[in-house]
Length: 104
Image 1 (cartoon, rainbow, N blue to C red):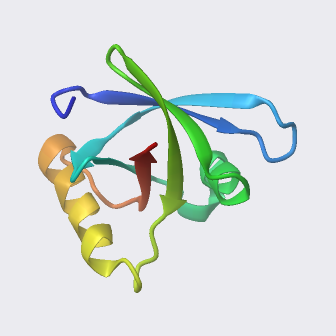
Image 2: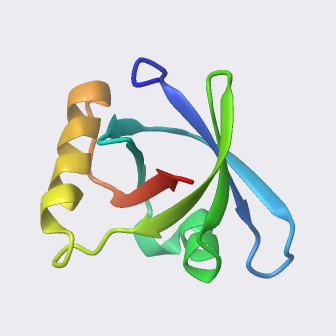
């Protein structure tokens, strides 16, 4: 799945309780997926994940449940920087806030 360009992430709206799907670039590492929030904590889907980390994911033909978490720049420093580096290598951009998605 690492050759895929896009992941479809469905979060639950923190205010409405309704599913919210986004299409976003991703990288894969150690059986987890990483996406970057360009607008960091202002991003609605980041706020949704903070409120409820249970998400649905679709990559290519595969769809599954997962748990998402926003990486902390200090506590998760190695993976934080690695996710940004992998995104730069794959897409030429890697300045956003990394979010880890762990399939269940």
